[in-house]
Length: 322
Image (tube, rainbow, N blue to C red; front, side):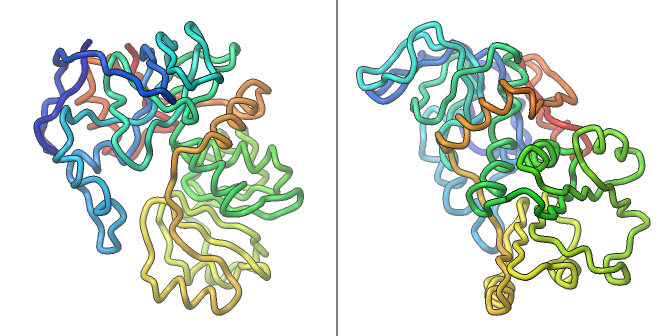
């Protein structure tokens, strides 16, 4: 099979295709013939051996150096070609999608991927492989923050930053599907599209002053963009509100301070989650959530896809097709 194999984590790696063996599967895994791959910021950050002071990536990204072959990527959609002896969820020929072994070494940048069955869901018939591959890490991040870390309910006031991005555009749709009143923070150029996703209000961050504005009475803030400090949101918290930072961690003292005041303010990571991916499949099948693909690249254009992701300007998701 063809795969993007790295000898080491190197931000300048050309990311060209190489030949390697098709992976063997464990009893609880299936072998997936990859049709599309979702690209995420964590992919280029891992490639650059990205770490932060709070150890956001330090706990696992550098450890990839000892794994051979080193193949990055977690988000895939494709067709099941082999089924492990303990797997009952899928059969050969099923079309599936999911986020594989996150955090960890999913080896998704390959023509075939050995995937734990619990990390996959059946691809709805009404969406493409590209749309399915897009709705993995970003969509799971949105779902886990709305339904696991917080339990959003009808009438909650939810503010979402970077609502035109990968996580954000799923979060807007999912929060709306749950009955929340969705307030999106973006710029004027993106406002009409974000409203079409389901946002009830749009705040133009180029004009809005959080410090001077009237209390927004927010139950949940999903800061997918990392634009503002927690202190800027505090006056807008309803009792018991939550603020989840998605792109970066927070100092322990900051988290403790807000917890002492009855607010849940913290970084939330993402993990492979059968409940989440199965729920996302239902939302995609119903049409309540749709993937928006900003740009598509061929498998032999992975370097260009990574460079595009690093710009941070793509609307929706970047997908690579095989």
